[in-house]
Image (cartoon, rainbow, N blue to C red):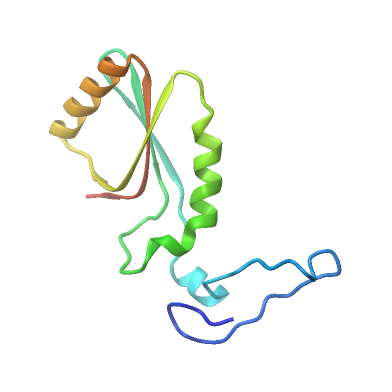
Length: 123
């Protein structure tokens, strides 16, 4: 296969159990290490409810985040089935007072806690 970032050819080691699986990989191990996942969870207390912000990357990289769909899908599946939470997905979030007021209004409108899944938090 060919890496979408560095355009180098790479091979996936396969065992006897997954020899005929047709999983498609887009990123080589070297680029995976260059743009690592760094999952951070921050809890923000709102007036009545709380907000949990799940960030996937530490910094904002100039890459196509769509190639990390397997990892984002697994994180999304683990968060979507929580009772009493409303899940929102954003590309990036800048946390300031205006955003906290909007999140507080959304949580009161839905009468539930919030989970925000984002690629990164802007400083």
